[in-house]
Length: 254
Image 1: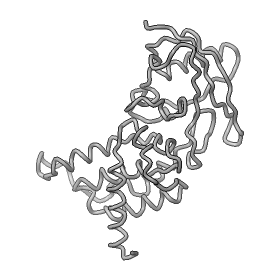
Image 2 (image 1 turned 90 degrees about the horizontal axis):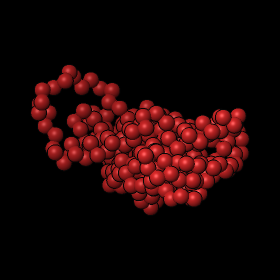
Image 3 (image 1 turned 135 degrees about the vertical axis):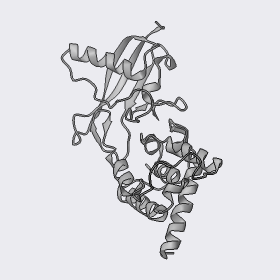
Image 4 (image 1 turned 45 degrees about the vertical axis):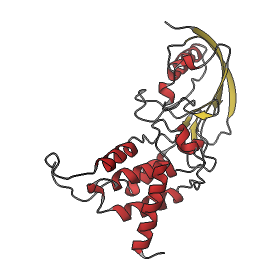
């Protein structure tokens, strides 16, 4: 058992998508520093239920930094600001006794708040469905090393494929840009042989869908890279811009 903390929580409460929302304050007493941030919220919700009050709604699933659903802004920073860490992996030892912790949902028009800390991130799903896949027949599983892939390309593809689609990049960006997410999804397929047949179509479709969903443009502030729990590099945005530019040229629109 770790050290016990007494904290004050300032939490965004919103009854539904139409509600204007407001901050409410709660006491979190006797919080064990070995708890994760979501476990702390679980305890607070148990107290609220015992008092006959509505618990704080928030998304979670794996609680292992894999699924990306624990989307919340903690003290002004998506996922709480600990490098390479999702909110579910953030531990209470990162906070001090007596602190006030402000907890909000993602703030972006493309991610409307549904209730409390729960946001609708289906815009990411629609971008992925527009082209972030391989539909051509790639054949049965080949023998090992039958399709050579340069190690540099394989490593980059794996780096890009780590993106969990949490949306922290959008929440941190002053323009609510989804460029880092789209760049990661485009790049990991463009770097492997199976992704080549639909390379140009994929770039055009995903960028167009991103714009249609209302995400802002990228001005390369680097805030997306700074908060990404998988530390996806800004270099992938440059790669995506090249992919999109080449696709436009081949289509004959520029």
